[in-house]
Image (cartoon, rainbow, N blue to C red; front, side, top):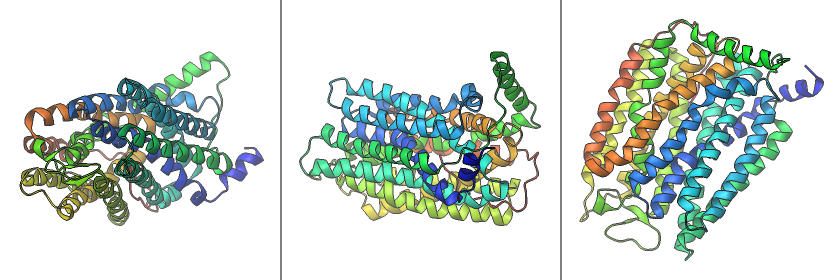
Length: 451
């Protein structure tokens, strides 16, 4: 290891872990939540939004096809900084595209590119985290990791969405307001890239392949080594099933909040003046779904980490955390039953029920990331195999997200949220039958997870 790399690696993790995971959270939230909120505000249907934006999620599931190659060329640090600069540029192009007539199609194409850059960044940030920190430090700073990933979500869903709503209330037209809001996210990613150029460690640097044949052999060995893991099928079934119920909620729940009361939504859609169809402001949605819910998620994510540290990740705790993640989904069914054009659901009630769901999700989801990190990915290709896990995890989100808008449009929100509850059952079953082939270091203290 050269002296430059040693110096960077010796930096306190507090100098780079928070900002690295902030940089992970911002683009993910922009693609998954902000894009849907913007397109809904600009008049597009739930079906159109969920089918188009959910399909972009496949980029996070392509990680196994190229994750191994990133370690063969350049450093993890190089790819992180390069992708952050690319994402800043793409966010700028997205903002500019709102001025053209076919902004929706162009925006979706840019989202595909943004998601690919985000997925590439995620692989290498996780790689730096896994290889620059020992297992004890991984557990110690996982709470910081999860907290700042969620801070990225706050920035996107509260600051960016809130800015768009505020600018419209001041008289700016919708497209111009959203362009200005997107430009804020562009600036944030550019600043993060500059900061990480100064502080981010390189992580471990494996032996470089010396020829094309060596590249192919390394890639093959990574894949074969993954297939040789004991109880792999059972572990992957857990990863695939754990987010099934949440997958239906991820895109559609915010659209339900933003939908007009006349269509069964909560009516958080007013940008200038409230009305019977839109009794609440878009800024209220940014406050509740962006800021309050995410702050609550931070707190309960930390509690989930403390719980897992105290009782360990066993089958009993895994099932309990799966129940914590899935049972609160019923709060959206309750909200859908309360919708009435004559008596809009009050903001305190909306805030309470939405944050209950977010709290349960944040507490329970710790188990998912910790299970992948400690049971599936350990080995000589830890970064690559962790990328395999997160890719498979995301596979369940693509069909559920794509179907969510169509189902909600055709079933109505009440029936749709009952479907969500039924879809949550496999998550609990997957946790009950999940195998535990690896013994976990007793000193490792897990914390809140993300995604």
